[in-house]
Image (cartoon, rainbow, N blue to C red; front, side, top):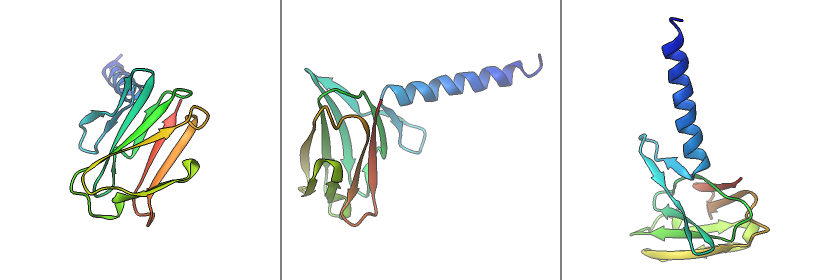
Length: 129
């Protein structure tokens, strides 16, 4: 029974991490949890910041739902402003500051959606479950 506190700690950690994955919350690497998936009407909105890479790098979202990936820039002049999402045939140089919305059809909102900068240095993934 002296291992009970350790077992409980591991279980609590697993629940917290599992909840973050299931509900679209991501850590920014410093331990801060970020909510980047929301619903607007019938559409699922996934917000990804593009500047010095993509944040968050991994998002979990609901599969089979009309989805919009909302790429947000703010003074972005690095290669993350040139984004490509191959499975959507999407390739665009984003405005330095602004929002670009990318529609993800229901039949694509399954499995994993991958996006990269055109140089391949930075990437992001949306895992649909």
